[in-house]
Length: 275
Image (cartoon, rainbow, N blue to C red; front, side):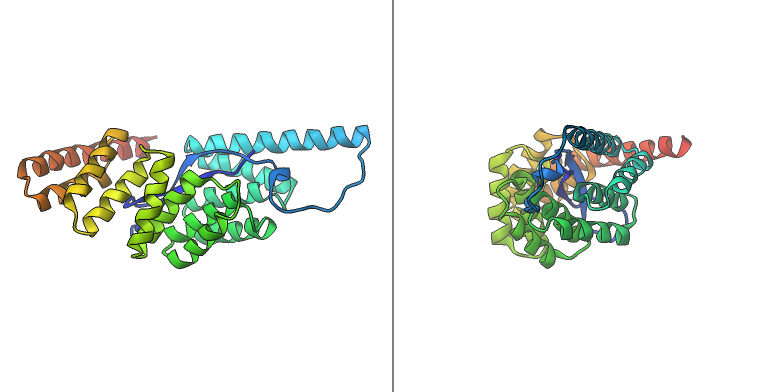
């Protein structure tokens, strides 16, 4: 079982409007505790009864982790937190449970608590690439780009690191910190793993526009529109690109789509408020 692997999504607002990045759950791979990188002490052979008890605890632990992850993915944050707390109550030294709780707290806006949970998890398994990636993604979302990039570099040393999401995070965070060459290199590497990664395509479009290449930005935003449904972020970028290229008709087309997307978002919010 593995903890959630996170990737940053540029120009989406997470909780406080001042944040420039958000952390989105892209997948829920899971690791067992035994799959961590930290060597443990040599254990004496277990009796049959002890082995069965250990296996039962492991199955219960994995069940809670999966259920909490599924609840989080479904947006059921309170249920996810209850399950994650049951998991950490059973074992306070489980880095996967602590990381999942950190992810949930961050989504709930409890950033201080999320930071503590990430730190605790990483102190237990300081070389695990997935934990380093998740904590780095959260730090970058909090504006700590330099510290996040240090963690991402450490994550690259783990052969089991989630490279598609990790390289995406490196590229987006490097872009945020103004390291354009490193950003482009990492983003292109991420596209090698997944040519249709929406967050990476959007980041590449933004990067090309920042570097003054509006034609390249157009190519990447069009790929982003083909890869996933349009959202406010990509439509706003599309308008910028087309206005810079002088294509008024295309810009007006995307402005219309942007207005429709905003009305749809408002309608969804209203439905949530009525529940």
